[in-house]
Length: 391
Image: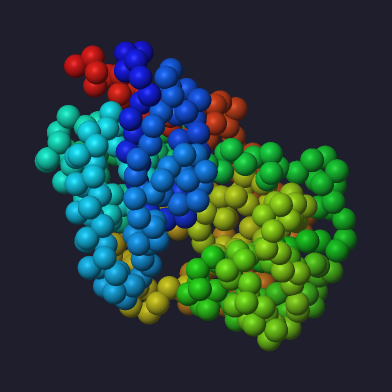
């Protein structure tokens, strides 16, 4: 591999918490695998700082959720965009790695490619072109030299849509399988009474607000016919909101904020009621039969059928290519329907068996017995740098 006989110069940018986790793991792998180590510049959060990055400005400057927040922070984001591009062009790194945050990082890539075309550019995490705005795939091709995908079907999607060269490296959850998968003793605990049911109404304030009441009512109905223990893992920053919300529920869940306690609950849970999101993939990898639900704002619900191009919004279903996890969206997200579906997966019947059989296919689909995703991503970065050096 024709790499420089010096530390690899890497400029890396992440714009949100999940990107910081990915970026930090990638940095650690690059430090391990690059023959002469690596030196980092860029923008990131605490995980990337722990791996050796001094962020040029707070990563939170780039984080905005929802139309109102984006408008309010737009002047700051545009200023940071210009500063970031200027810094990259001045640094002349061996490689620029842009982690997630597509609205910001794609603009960085476009501007850097125009001003400094010799800099190799890697995008880590594919935008959801398979769900909506498929034109983004072709738009990325001129500025992105390599796209690193988390989901196994994404390379084929980008090939079909005319996107950049795409390599599947694996989902970061695959590095946590030891935390997620139950031991034989914990597996036996799933059959004990009372059954443990995980309750996961989302990580964002708006998700909790829209799903909280309907989840509470559904749990009340389930508790009338099943001997169950409800456990609600949440983020520390959501604790006050969750505590206030659950005081009005007919049953009181045990609330967890510690990550170790969360994964212990995953390993011993018999079933889960969850908001659509990455957590449904965590549950599938843990082998926990799940009922998924989601509600969006009224105007989003009106336009969704016109822009979404997928048969399911649940990640395990998309990966499996079948709707194994039942999903209840918008008007279908009612206490009665959720309680009925949750009762079905709690019982030892067809609904539960179908999910368990489907989830067993995930190891083969994801390739979980191979190298960790962060290591695969690091090797892909090094190979691109070597390839560019040869030309």
